[in-house]
Length: 230
Image 1 (cartoon, helix red, strand yellow):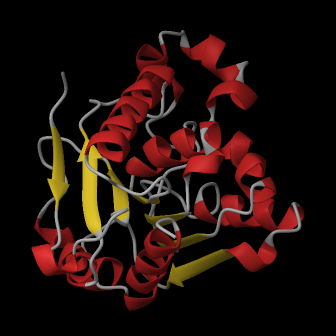
Image 2 (spheres, rainbow, N blue to C red):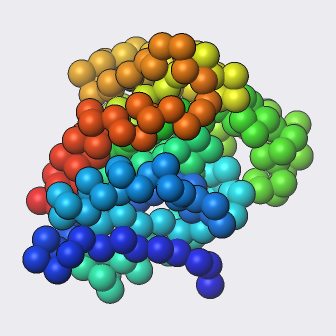
């Protein structure tokens, strides 16, 4: 058993199937107060927010198994929609994208706040390897199998819409190797109309209000969650 959470809209706003946001990372300190406004917008729009604590899984096969178990629980027993909109904050990008790449038919969209997509940039291969039950060398030699950035073509082919906001001064999760590279791969796959990257000029990996009160990201996530419930 793993800790998990569900934020439900008020009863009059609930639906069947219930539109929802699949959020990551869900850890002892996340989500936190910075997401409060954003989550309130979702709930007022009739969209639930949910997540499961898989520990520092970094998108590993085990973390994907736990995501699937949680997904099965809420879709079969809680009347949640078959296609959530995924939302990853920072390293949560690894969680949601890894699962989405393995389950593109179960995803209505992906949103991200300075999301990580490349294990080599964060948490770096030596730190990620234990979660994958591999050595850093083994992880490095099998990128197509394990590194989410190498798998985004699957999402482009499945026509999964994505929207990210990322600071151009981010030193923790560099824009170039993560959100910008993701967007470039979508464009290369002919899916440029399905990707939107909002670059926050002058911003790093921080609590700038613009990251967490981004109306465009919120509206995108609500629209995709609703589409996933149709």
